[in-house]
Length: 299
Image 1 (cartoon, one colour):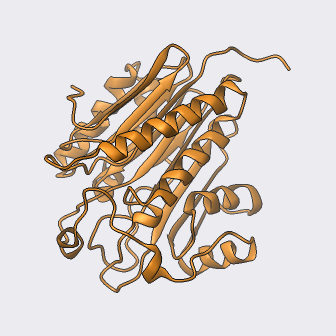
Image 2 (cartoon, rainbow, N blue to C red; image 1 turned 90 degrees about the vertical axis):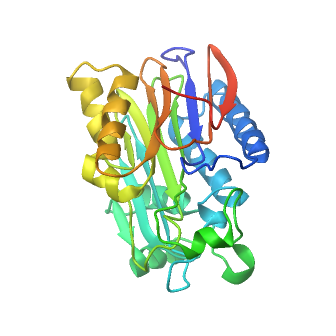
């Protein structure tokens, strides 16, 4: 089978809520391991959609991040999860919001994309879909969820937008882009709170030009237009990839929020930017060896 090129690119984030002084060595090692696995998948001809789903699923089940197993209960004592995924070639997308007790919210989001007529399912409807479609569930929530690296019980008790999210963006060797994002939401959130992560065009976006996954204070990303704002600046305003992301992140900051975003373009360019204290991140491409970072300046 002929390929568009041998060019590929992959970027991952484990959230822009990194706290100075914390040791994220285990997180960086995990991100490097995932990036290497993603590189192998892309070199083997796997689709960008398969790769971003796999990357995010592995972060969800690791318990290292505020997503999946590392998610915390809301103020009502329930763990509610959000996730989304988007195929840039077709612009098919799927999302779940406030879903409970599924092992991989991003897998359910892909199921919504491929096996329903909806783009987003929320709450009881999302859980009913997951059950009907046979997605793996959690038998004992009290024994399953754990505190991720860098999060304490004190963080869960506060309501000052302490956040964490995971995401992946990829360009495959057929020239197709995809993005996926998953989160347990801000810590100490009220029941039913939904941020930017499951909103296509805000927390996640992919088309034929760019793939983006965002992380941060979701309320502010929603108000700033999020991923699609950056994508339109890149496509229509002639911004570079970094200029487009910074314009959106600067707007988030002007509204009182913080966070970060990762992006890959159709040419294989990668950008990983943040205006918070740090962002757990990794990247690899056909012409760049795997790299990881958390606090190194990006501007």
